[in-house]
Length: 600
Image (cartoon, rainbow, N blue to C red):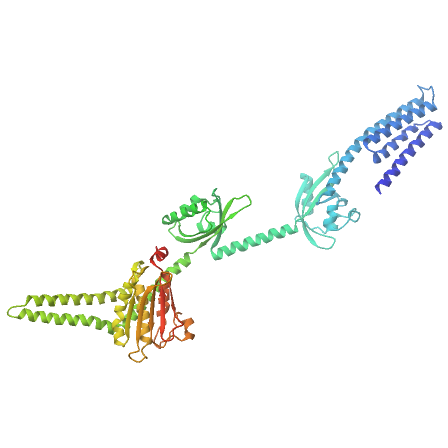
């Protein structure tokens, strides 16, 4: 369509030039007919290039001169010649201004063409709001084509909702020349969107406002994403406050730190104070600063996981327990940053200590209860050496009452008394050890010695109940790291359970066997076997549950305490379900090298 129009204009310009030439040459009109060539120049500006306009202008001037020479030969200082000169001047002036306007118009067209290629919606409207230009970006954004939008009131078309009063916005625009903000508008489909609007006031050559240029960008999805991110951050911050878990990040080797709001609260750093390693070290308990230094060294060494607990010493004397867990993350450039979580575990530490004290108390009560069950046997164990001491003392007195005292017999009697004293003392020491109340002391032990001392307390009880007790100990040292009293409690409890379980068995069939050796993995293994009725298969899953018991007068705490003790020593305890008759309790403990790593 544009090519046809240009062709017609070019042909019209040529025809008009020819017509003007004929009229100017043939007719005798005493007017400056050649001035009409100005019209040809103006038409040429629309369809020709700058060079083409110059060619047309020169041609029109030549035609003017030719027409003058043909129609007025030999006339120089006549009105006709003056008219010719005026026509030439008019054509020249028109050509100069036309070319100047063409350059400006061409530049404007280039700029408009470039603007039409942008994805932004570019709209030009009058001061009254009437749309004068509507680029393809605006058509794509809103749905109206240029022909439909032009002549419409912009804000009525888009149903614009302003963030501030329209008068205030226009006041800012006239005062500063620009305005930026977000507008709520509607597409042709009726869909509501939010656009970022940038307005510029267009002025004429005299500085008078003539129009407003506006660019619109759809920011609906961006705002929704920002709002979702803000909501997620709020949820995360709230969850961190509730769970007392915070986010941290630190780069290596630069040492730049990132603390979430909850992390700042945990360390009680001011919000305006950027976190730094120096501040962390100052807040750390003096006894735990070495731990932080090890963490820093591990991070510099690119450790795959940083997992550590340490304490914070607050300015008012409070102590906080903190658990740090972090993993390294590499970006595309290979930079390393540790991303992790920082959790305050003060409450759990206090609860853990309270639970530990409760377990110690309960274990002590259970031991005392067990000793109560052994009171008859203990009394017999103590009474025997006392009786022997009395007999040996009386015998020694009789030897001294002879006319010639037999010093050798007296000495022998006193030695027997001392032996019985040591025997009674050993019994008392075992009872005191088992009944004492103290925190566990994890030290290197020979499991065989622990078993021997524990069985010495139940030996008499086994005899009293008609139980044949046999002990099989390996010849090698079974070194473990543990608390002697707690391990003795496990052995005594298992042995007493076995003795009581065989109460209904015929005499002569009550056999208790205790074996200690090293298993296939090299760990010390204790097995307590009896010939009682065994364990009900339905009771096996609950056997080690607190308060579960098969005894009519039992508390149901013996086996749970045994399991807790064994697991605190890094071992495990279980029942052999494949045993044909009776029950067999297995207790495995880690060898000294492994247990040292756990309790050292």
